[in-house]
Each structure stands twice: as C-alpha cells, then as structure tokens.
Length: 142
Image (tube, rainbow, N blue to C red; front, side, top):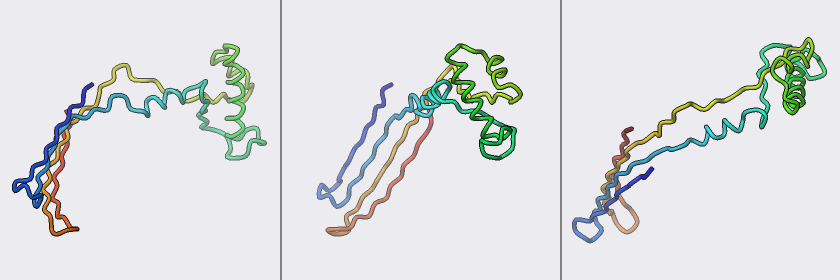
C-alpha cells in the first residue's frame, strides 16, 4: 500500500523571521507485529498451559498448579512428537487433569488500518537562540 505524503515550508518575507509549515499524509498499519508474535506463541513453539485449579505451592506438591503445568508440558512435548490427540494427552497424566495450552488463531479477514494525518505550524524567530512555535496536528481514520 502506498503512503503518500506532502509537506511545504514557506517564509513570507524570505528572511526566515516567520516560517509557515504544513503537511498531510496517508499512514497505514498493514500487519501488526503483535499478530505475528501471537502465532509464534502457539504450541509446539511455546507451551503455555492454562491451569485454573490446584494449590498454590511448589512443584514437589503433586496437586499444585505448578506441578500440573510441568506435568502437562512434559506430556505435551512427548505426546506431540508421537502424534497424540487430546484424549491421549489427558490419559498420559492419569488422575491429574491435563492443562491445555493457549492457542491464538488469526482472523479470517484483515483490514488495513488507514489514517490521514496533517499538521500546520507557524514559527517566529525571537532572536538568535529563541523561537516561538504554534502547531496544530490532527488525524482522521479512513
């Protein structure tokens, strides 16, 4: 997608005492990086179990949420390489409930976010080292 932009600068007296600037442009966010990162956070690249039960304790306690997460990860890693399905993964843990991994699925249709942005600026020199600047900037989603 093209993102055209136009900017101008004008000094009415030509002595750089007053400068008027302006610009307008089309901006687009074609594919957000967080969507890409979310896909790579899916299993088997990364196993993130959702454990909503168990005691808050260390992994040496078999019914702690930490122990369930570790056991689920080990069952998943071993089972995934063997082609196990969800029922087989759950059976591999015995009495401990298998904590399923989180999963991100992309939307079927992406819409590119587009916006027009603009700005106008008036700049007045106040001496050798000082400048007064008045700026207006805006944006409108298309």
